[in-house]
Image (cartoon, rainbow, N blue to C red; front, side, top):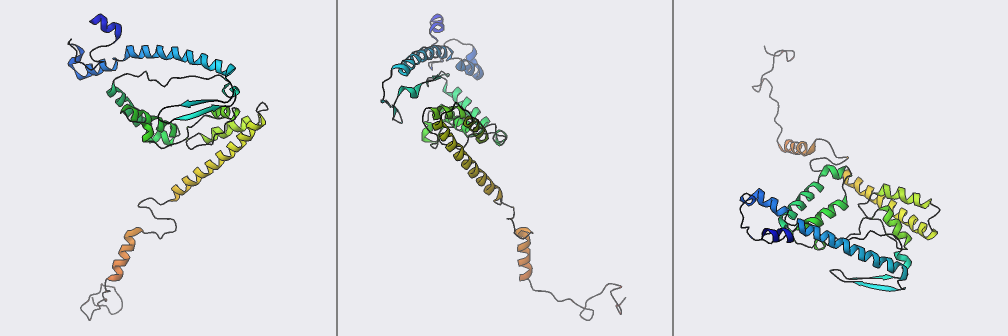
Length: 287
């Protein structure tokens, strides 16, 4: 039995069965350690499987780049079916990094949930967000990982948004004849600087430069909108703070003034009315 388990990697813990041998399973920490390593052999087999199919898909892509007939249309099935139409095989020319969406993570659901929760908490660090280290792309990826760890579809929770691309990826899409608009969450100064460098490159085609100029203008407009939103948010008075131009003193002073106006004024009492005066209060004052 031990030889079979070591050969196949199917232990009692990996298939959800109580082990017969007593050892590390005496404590919760030992059981958690064994569960974290339960999918080690599965991960190795899945990685080899992915490497094999990536090579097959790379050969198919190389053949399509040379012999694909024009006006080819592909239908993509799944949760969001779509159609991809390729007018000419020159649209898919280039060197691509092919990846498979199949996961090679551990099969332990609790381990995946713990890791996803820790990543989400670290991503929501306000210091990293204010410093610009993390942005909208990191938040979206962390929430996707969190929902998938609990068996939920992230697309049913997250709002639809265009993916955030790097300037190099946008330039590749422009060269392929496809225009992409700027989105919030990207590094706007970096995008503008690299796109302006591409505009001065003589190797860039005129039609690509036209799309680059349009993209730079839309990026600047997006930056102005973000700055206006930030200025409006900063000028908005916070709870407990007075608005610009409001009289000083706050709400307590206004309420005290209203209470003082409502109370009757008490007349001052002189000496003849039983009042008293302090020594040195004036000529003729009683001592």
